[in-house]
Amino acid sequence: MESTNVTRKRTYADFSYRQVVSRFKLFDDIEYLDLERLWSVVVRVDVKFPVSRHRDSQHFILMDINGSKIEAIASNSNVERFNTLLAEGCVYTLHEVRFDPNWEEAVQFRNIGHQYECVLNDRTRVESYTMPIQFPLYPKHLTPIHEVYRRPNKTFVDIAGVVVHWCKLEHVGHSKPYREVILMDTRFNLIVVGIWSELLERYAISLQSAGNNNHVILGTMLKLNKRHSECFLTFLFKDKEY
Image (cartoon, rainbow, N blue to C red; front, side):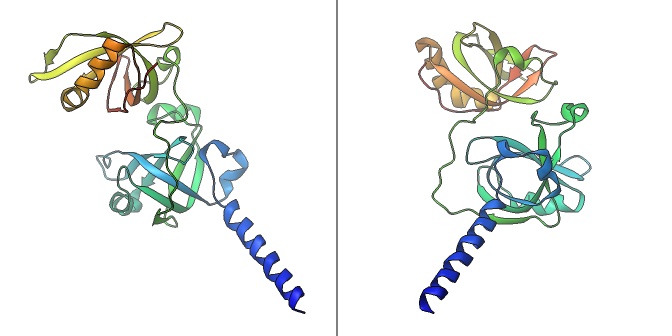
């Protein structure tokens, strides 16, 4: 009888564990058949955008433990709740989230071009994440420079390249400091990155050093501006030797 009880307990524990694990989802593993279910995700809030002008929506960029990103959206009555609960740079476990398709015709209204989006709804629960799993420093998916301009205007991309030119300092608008940096990838494609004010001061030394020593730098959440044929730098990780 004792051995039978032990066996039953082990079987029940294994079954329970499989059930819990099966509810978690990584962003690269989302499939169309998953859209009817509710999932749990472990994420870091990479970017928290301001609440919309009419306070009827708020957008977040979430990164999972593999470095993949997705856009999450809270709407209407949930805006104030998630604006309070989620802080940029913090890690959470989100339970009972839903994934919806990011239809092709709606991509231009999204901040990143993922095939799916994450919906934060009334049932979504937020827990602080305390497990010792380190999130990657760099995002998993980088946009090749030659594909950047195929993206819709004002969307954000993550790119990497060698600093080949460090342009002169300019002052635009209300005397805001501005400088352009030209990056080149391994295919010799070039792209101009415009850097403004606070970010210019913050990364001036590291960018100039990267230009002098032919380092590769990684720029994340670069906003594409086709009107000026450049990207505006909003976030930048540390440089890395090529």
